[in-house]
Length: 306
Image (cartoon, rainbow, N blue to C red; front, side, top):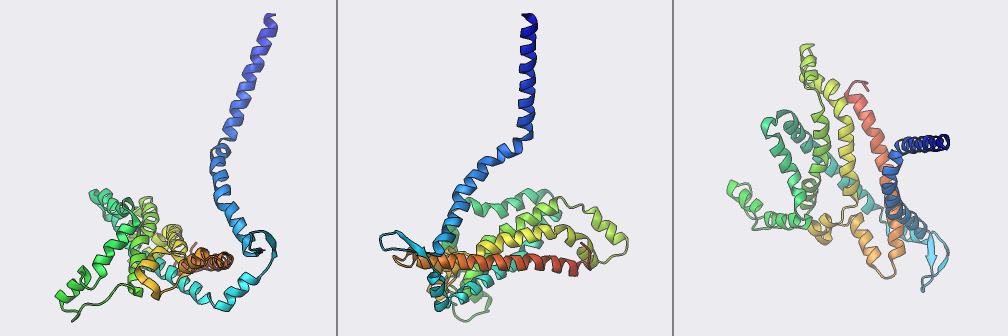
């Protein structure tokens, strides 16, 4: 009897060990499965449904009639490619300007911030603590005819009368850069935090100039972070709706504005879905070209160094 009980206990312990080993082995999958299910239900599934709907024709009562390319044909007739390429220009320009501003800002905070590093990083993050629309309305008071910017330019004697900055391309780009600057700054800052400053000193000791040190030492290390920040700005800026709508008014049409007009219309929703698929495909292709272009640019700037 004791032998049977001992055998049962050993088998039970062995079973627990196997279960524990299996749980350890499959732990990453178990932790990530919830996020995968969530993303599948609320991202991939709607994406597939949108893709199918762009090629579908529905009856007035909502019943499915068949597949068609008529929605895309109507988009081609309306010549909305100009809107798509204008949105690409907006996203690319915003990404480039934020890079020019964000890189020295991240460099200053990470390597020159000293004891003020945390405070400076706090100033970069703090805009996320308030409502996005409040930022836009605050800029109205800065850019209006009687606003701070016009008063400053008048006081400096740079203009003779107030300029209407609102509803202009300048206002749209200014607000885009203001909003997306942290998305460029933070990835570069994170990479600089891990960067070893002694590499710069070693390069200078070996006779390299500051430009050579930047090209051969700093840039190869920071390029993945720069690439990440660029696409974190470029892709959402392409489909931005609120900023162009409020800061540009009716003068400017971008992808987000066109999609909203189509989707909110009673009979134009299928065309809006087709336009979304078309613009998304062009964005994907443009992102791929830019992704490959960043590697070519890195290779040229670093003199072939990977």
